[in-house]
Image (cartoon, rainbow, N blue to C red; front, side, top):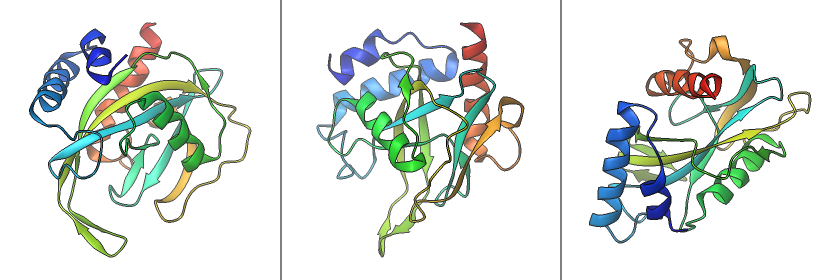
Length: 184
């Protein structure tokens, strides 16, 4: 199933997702290159809401560019199978082996990326059209993070998902992900 088909099939959870779904489908319609960083306006990324078996904690990574804690994820870099991208990103960013709880999209959101320097080159501000999947991992396994992309990684109880150390734009997303899990 193509990314467009997956998004068309996806039922938004709330008004934010309704607007972001509209934006994502329009972006796919208006641009040819939506899966690589060559599109300077934005591109698709894949992320994961990684929870423990008891569904009481989630994994967060301290993202250098966003200067705060956020769920793991990364660029599609040309790959349309965003679930595979999300699994790979979690494993690269955390060292965890994950169990995918649902092969379908769990959540969507448009996330701003501020202009920054990456590998010595300036990257203009742009938009990440983020497709997120839900996964489970063992919270007793030691976490490993990549120092070139983050300052740390940890499991946090759901109660801390919207505290002041989280990226500003991600606090309501974290709350939505947890609420959606509890509504299942």
